Length: 273
Image 1 (spheres, rainbow, N blue to C red):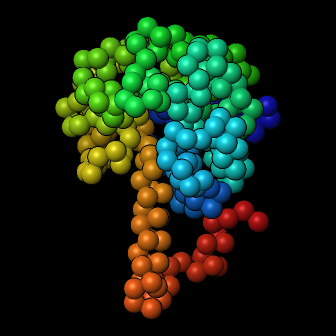
Image 2: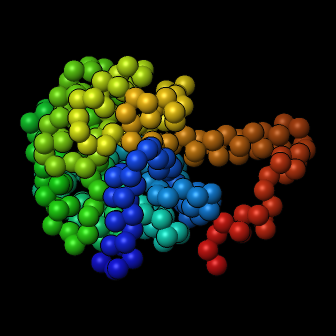
């Protein structure tokens, strides 16, 4: 561990402890990381879905080694603290999850999330096993020489089990097991967001982009959210621009998209030399 990683870890913790709400956008390569850091975002996250897409795959089809290599690229691109989407920890057992946390730290990450979905269809781990996995991740995180920020995810609403009471029970169990941040992707409305935030004492992350519409930062702050992540939404926005430009070339035989694109000089201003 370098002093730089220690400092990044402290900065990420400070963002969670400071008053107000903050956005932790999800980068997918060094260039996107540079742009987001250049715009003033104070911390970055990876996205398992965006990582998979950069390899031409769907979410959940990336190995742990591939995910950590992807994270290293983003860590190296800026001085921002980076937290990773570590999916289910790349294994079922608490021991594998703990190992994943240690390897994530070795890749330069200062935070990461572990979810309670098995990765096979919509199946969830039972609450007891899911909590054991979070506890193992928390123990591994606490053993590191810097404050690794562990996020625990309750996946009910995106895995075919939209049960708010069960979601809250899981998040409360994960909080008790040592998670630093709690996260239930896919919450359907601000009432559900408020209920989750009121039921736990640790910071709550809200994910933008799971559903077709979302809420404002002000709405989420008023509901009690501390941190907002953007999932694959920025990557999909970038790919939407690619799709529109490529269709223009294919269908119209024109290149008007160039007029609205940033110049190479503008792009280079965001990148490390």
